[in-house]
Each structure stands twice: as C-alpha cells, then as structure tokens.
Length: 498
Image (tube, rainbow, N blue to C red; front, side, top):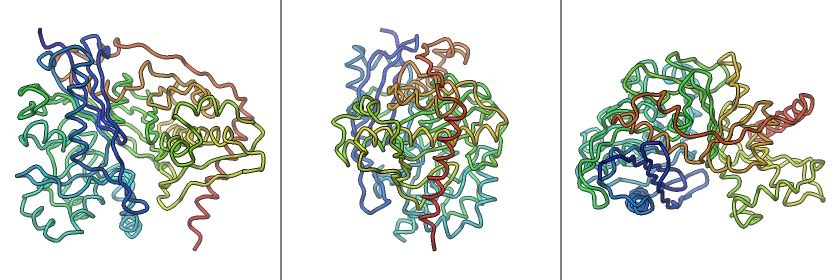
C-alpha cells in the first residue's frame, strides 16, 4: 500500500494522543493515554519524562491498529506538544537528569519577582512577560540545583528543550536536536523579530547556548524516525508546533484577525497577526504562529491557566461530579439568582493580569448554594477570563474577530459555549472536532511533505460545527462583566496586602 496517511503525535499536559489522518484530512484512527502529574511541593508540577515517552510508544501502535493500516502507509509524522514544559537530558545516553518541569509550575516565582525591573526590555525583545510560566527560569532552576549538572551543561554534555525537542531526540535516535519557532518563542530565550536564540537573553538566564536545539519553521525537515520498536526507520518528521499554535493552524486560521480559543487544562486564545508583530500594551503576549519556511508569522496570545483543570477539581477534589461531562447538565440546573462567582486562579492569574501569587476564590456563597451553582460558577469563571483576553486583544489589534473559533474538551459542552457567547457578545463557532491540536500537527506535516500543496487546500478540508450567538442584552453583559472585574481585583488585592 502506498504511503498516504499522516500520523500526529499530540503530547499534552494530561494525556498523549496519536491520531491518523487520511489525504482528505479526515481522522481515521486514534488512541490516547493519560499522564500522571506530580506535585512534590505546593506550586510545583512535574512529569516523568520516561512516562511521556512510554505513552508515545503505546499510543502510536494503538492508533495504527484503530485505523486498520500499517506503519508503512504513514507518509509523514507531525508533533504537537504542551509548551514551556522544560527537560534536560544527557547527550550520550538520552536519559533525562530530572523530572520535566511543567508549564504550570510556579517554583521560580521569587526569581521572576526579584527581576521585575527588567521586564520591560525582556518584553520588548521576546514578546513575553517575566513569569514562571516560561521555560527560561525553569531551565535556570534545573542548572542551579546541581553544580555538577551546570558544569556538564557548560561542557556541552547535556541537551535541553521543550517536550517537542525531547520527542524529536528520541524519535530520531539522538540524530536531531531541534525545535520549531512556535515552541522557541515561548522560552524567553528567543529574539522575536529574528526568530533565533539571543546571546544576551541566554546570559541573563545563565543558560549556555550550547544546550539549546536548532530552531526551524513549523513545516520543515525534522529528520526521520530511527531505532524505534514501534515505527520503522525512515518516516519523515515534517511538522512540529506548540499545542496552541497547532490548534490555530488546525482551525485553518491563517489570516490576520482570525482567532481561536482552545479549552484544555487551561484556556488559550490566539489571534493571527500576519507577518507584522504587534507589541501588546494590554499585557498579552506576542508569539510566533505556525507556518512554513517563509516569512515569520505572528499572533497575539492570552493564557488562562485554569480551565478544564477547574472541572477536574470539581470531579476529583470536591467529588461533585462522576465524570467531567456531567458538569453540563448540572450547570443547567443552577438558580440564576444565586450570586455565586468563582475566580479560578488556583495556580495564579494569567493574562492580562499576570499575578502568579493569587489563589482561587469563591464569592457569593449562601445557605441556598447548591452543587449546580458551583458548576455554573466554575464554567462562568473560565468564560469571564477568556472575555478578558479578547477585550485586551481588541484594544491591541484595533479590532475584534468576527467570531471566536473554539476547540478542546470543554468546547463539547454546549451550555458552556452559549454562556461564552453571552459573556463575549460575539458568536462562538464550535470546531467539528475537539482534536484541532493534533490536526494542526498533521496539516503541518502534510504541508511539509507535499500531501497538501498550500494553505487554500487546507482551508477546504474539514467542516465547521454549530455557531452559538449571544443572548444576553448589552446591559446584562456589562453588569456581569463589572461584577467579575470587581471580584478579580479583590483577589489581587487580598493576596498582595503587605
């Protein structure tokens, strides 16, 4: 059989997926495995790199079996990954020297706070704020904990990278140490206007440049598979992108002004800017959008750290839900007159507030508050945070998108999407699949290998889901947004007293 399919490996925060796509861009097989999160101290979040790799080894054969095809029918492979999560490994053995520090981890909050005066020039050079979210301070921390580790790094014995780089290293038997522009743009070590590592930034974070991977376009040559027990040698790896940029690409949002929000563990909003970067004056980030080897494409981005994680908290922490999907009918039973409101800042507030030392706060409890009211407040807390992002992006870019394209696990919840449209005052368009991140990786790989010749061909693939139009009046929306803004400011003030 000819090689006519694309394999996407989507390595996320809570799970790893492999999905097979045919030449029409249709999903024809998939498999997934959950990942364990480790919390060794409050504010610390880690992954076991070997568990990540083992999950890849398991899901790829399972997806091939589900699709009913052989590995020889794979024409190209694409990778999407949780961004900012940072790893350090030995160049000779390929073994990691510590657990991966996950993007949610806050252990470097003091480091960032002590250097707050330097944020302006870092922002101007990288498009990012100085926050524990990004990779550079995580890598600094890994090297600072062990002087022998730092010496090995300075001697060139170690390699560093985000999850994509680690997977590329393992997939190619250590022949390729690379990353793509989108992942590199999330490290605080890349100069945004040049799309290359910056000497001064590396010195600032005490990161030897020899540790870092080569930076390539998202649809590019990332080598071929080698030495694996679950795939044959020689499969071209032609697409790599951080999960959120992959989702933007998978939503076929290639033009300036087109925007999407992905609701996973967190919620991530991106609005395409074309080839002209805009430096946000409302504390959003400027990041690199996925694309081919041509001119660099940019996007405005805002991140909400807690979205689906809040639903899991209701399920696993409070045990109010048997399954995550049970939140939809439960929220629909809420009494709209109950004043309960949740600011879900359990690991700090992301954009546009950037307050890493806040915690989640529940307002408006009464003796009549029910589990349904808590479910509704949880979903609304996510939707209000996303509305903050779009408001900031509209001020920066001078225009709001005509609609917000949405994907991810929470985007299957129709009650939530209607409430998101109500709070935004904009139509919300559901993707035809929740797996747009993997689809973006597949699109990039297929584009890189020539299965799909251009972006217009990609636009013609797939379909669109239903659109949810706003139902709230302008007056109701304004009243609710003002109530939300007061709550957020109260949380910030509370945790910054003294």
